[in-house]
Image 1 (cartoon, one colour):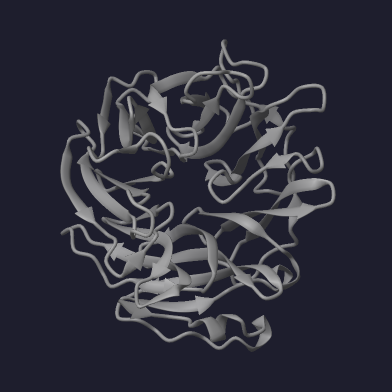
Image 2: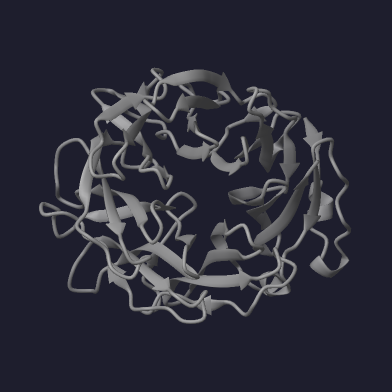
Length: 412
């Protein structure tokens, strides 16, 4: 395990923050823009396009509710432009650390954002909505409601959205839909998938994918230009919850393959369901998931698996909870033939300190030591810029309230 950035250092004012020390596998440098020092930003999401552009989406709460903001950088985070509010209806963003707004760079200078939004006062429930820019984020088109399906009740809750690029110009979105108030019976969610053929400006009808899902989990989505679409979700079958993988070979038109990532489900009553992450790296698929402890006071766990893109078959599973306690939802980001794994968790050597733990998973299934970022971490995000550089972001709770920090990770 590698220490980086102790709590005292991270509470230092931004202007005085020294460059953190390097580690055996990565150098770390803070790139938090000055505007975040005076903003109580929550629920961040980072995206990178491989050419130096970074997008940072985050949520700010005020007396009217919650709004999603976007800040863009053209030089790998050295400078960010002035943040702009993206939701056209003030205070209607429904967000938390798991169900946050997401941002994606799409081909053709497009920037796509999607989030869960409350409906107007005459209707209960929430919709997944999106806005798209075709000029690099200078301007955005209208808010578009993604289709909820033909049988969605008026009070349905649509949340936990994820975005992915597929074929050029094609953007996919998946989310969880729950019945909402008054539905009765055991609460189960449906995973829905929709496609945009014009970079997020308009969206087609959504389809249901996979089986029943846990209502409080988070799905993951990744795709390639060859027609592979992988969707992982927190399955809820019988009395157990366990992460599942659905695989399409025809661009998402059909999902003939749906299997368990882990056979160790959680009890249906009590405990949080698995948070799932996916990545495609040089023809291999990677998945990560977390699970709450079976008994109160236990440590919980986070696991990874490698699977074949050709047929979804599992090649290897590994526990990744060494030196960590109470892990949260994992994050994966492809880095050539390797993958970055990020997990908010408590450091085993200092359980009072909640950190953003990041490690590198090699193509040979080896893993680097953990790099521990922050203190009092509430949520985190991760994006890869190129084969040797990534950007990490996390929200930590300070004496003055939440603070969103950004750091560049330079791999050795």
